Length: 420
Ligand code: AMP
Ligand code: GLY
Image 1 (cartoon, protein in one colour):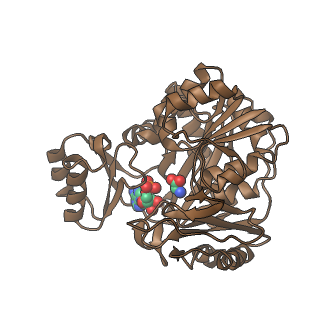
Image 2 (tube, helix red, strand yellow):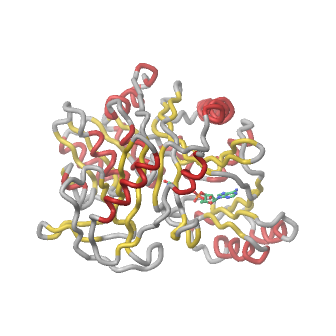
């Protein structure tokens, strides 16, 4: 079977490694992949957003199955284009990907179907948004409607900061057309949980829960990043909360998408906040999270390709989806300076056994792996307990060398404190 994975970060490296466990795969491609993924798949220099290029490649190689991992190609309709030439895919079509592609759409969906989320107002007119902010409760949260590389959310501690955020999105257009509409929403508090779920529109199978660490610095300080580390399972996410989320959030979201004629097939990501008034949805993503995938998939005991093919065929109910009872921790090693400016091109030395080191931003040059991005590596370890997984990850981190390496020293500490 010929399989291709679209994307080229740490999430895609994790997916590629997991897919490879299936012996039915005879050829495995990553478009564009990266210098680390090249150890596990054939990397092809076609951008993940280049729909025509990807379709032409799929035809040329007679690809049987595609996994479309990042948000942009999904929102642009990559799955629709591949389905049109007869390639089965894991990932939602364009209509369903709107659940991540438009915050206005997702907020209105939740309101219409009574799915718990922060109170909000939508604006397409800057003067009205600024007027609303005169009396809105502070802190408040300002969100650009469309995709914004994970940077379209501003938590404003003052009225002035909220107005600045609105002006930069709606007037200065720092996120382009994504700022034509903004959502201004209630500031919620409580522990955050990420839950990724397989769904084919009929069955919903949540994966093991996880916790991201989005801020750049220890103690959740500093700028927001793509994610500096993850742990799984998330100790805040008890059995009782999981049951409540299934009833009030996961199944109602699946049904809502069906009713809107936007059946979602793929991995639906629920970004949840466990507020004093119960779990609420902070955001939906139409794909696997990064770096959540780097702790969730290493704990998956069932075959990933089989599950993905069942999702695509609408037969998820027949698939076995089993997770280990162990725990995992992923520490992201980044280039110093990330998420602002940083230098690249430094040689990376990995330990002998690096099967659970997922490469996010690195390239190969003359047989040498060089740093090539803000987030460079995700160092994952699995162990019987979370404490051991955290300790092992940091031991492995010490054996990885590259100049200007930066990582948070406290990944998992909040979770460990919550365990006792
Ligand atoms: P996002 O880029 O949508 O993942 O949002 C980034 C982060 O902003 C989330 O992980 C939350 O920590 C925070 N956030 C988003 N919406 C809210 C909200 N309504 N209340 C409090 N925090 C929020
Ligand atoms: N880790 C957050 C995301 O993938 O959006």
